Image (cartoon, rainbow, N blue to C red; front, side, top):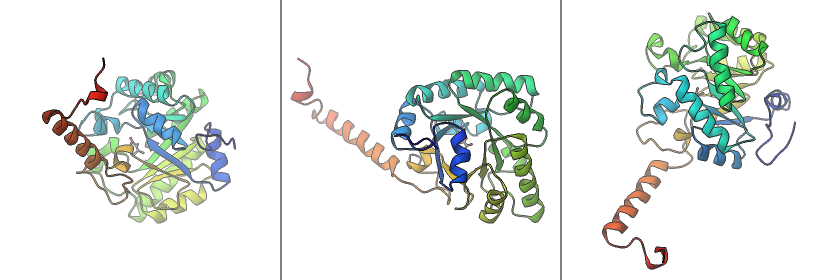
Length: 271
Ligand code: KIV
């Protein structure tokens, strides 16, 4: 595995190497150049330009509102901020459900915008698309469990795989995704025991979010881990910063300074 100042993952091949070495893979989402640069400097292994950008950045109600144009623009910004990082970009809602040619076109646009790989949700009904993209030279990350693009079908953001049948279906889909050539598999909001079982039986690494401690890696949404949304606090998120309070406090201090003629000060005034 190539060691470097950004972390140990330099290409998607290093995902398998990390899995083989039992070295946890660390991912976050990133939506812009600055976030990507900070993630790279912090030693994050790889970033995901998640379709969660629709909610976290654009204030839209769900990820089904992410468009290919939106995903390409954010992917390009992330790539500019982190030229050497593995950047995975989400195929937006339905982009992989319109057949192989349309999926290849969408994935190609993301790769040309700067993505190293694409991620797509689910498996049933687009197995051929996964094989086609991998066969076309585009690395694919899978995503099973809670698949937010299916929020309306799932009846909300709920833990998946709690019943024996559901767990078995996710487990079988995970095996099939690996056979189809995904280089890694996101498991979102599934019971920890199920994630551990899947992780143990796959040679490709699992990347968990709300899936317990025994996946091969973890991913968190960057705005969640930075605590930027005070109203969103699922149990599986750990906040590493009270970002909302810090940012709001800084903005309030700036406003107070301007109103009290305390900003700009003499040394901040250009001659
Ligand atoms: O869009 C996203 O942020 C994701 C992660 C939750 C894995 O898919």
